[in-house]
Length: 241
Image (tube, rainbow, N blue to C red):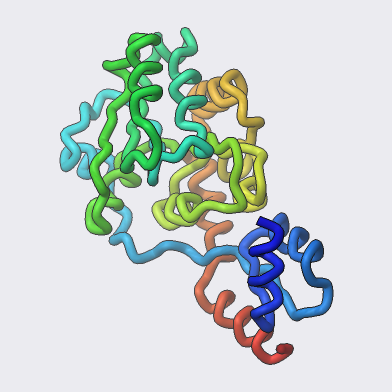
């Protein structure tokens, strides 16, 4: 990895990173070329916000439940197994909370389905594992109460920016640059990538009825992530190169 990274870094004139974590990593390879941090702009191309009841009807979801969303390609580092284990917490098993998993498997699916069977979670976890076309993304985000990103490793994630666009509170883990994008206790919760902490954060969100407060904060926070800011960063780095 280091050899290929050196090769890449030496072949370009400047850098834009989407997390401070990656910006710091750059110094291992080059300290002189121009660089700038700019978080990923919003993914605002996935249609508009609409009422949960409308989206849930489209997805044929029971409107009497609360829904968590795990979204995107399923790879082992994304920690879906941690979230499934969290759903096995007796407090969550006894609740009216369901988990919606929307995305294709890019890893062996068997261990995940085995976990669901082992914990008898078939009625609490809805697996939607076909490719999600762009025109259906809005339905999944609009239908949910809380987006969960239980990653074990990451630099940053586009799922965060989709959640911001649809004004959805988030739970994410303290890995890479993920926590930079989700102010803890303001737009969601940031936890260690551990089953117990993930379960506690989910329960805390619903018990304290934080949805309204978090959404109001998201409306303010999301203004930081405009495409104009990315264009400005590109122009600055290009001018310094």
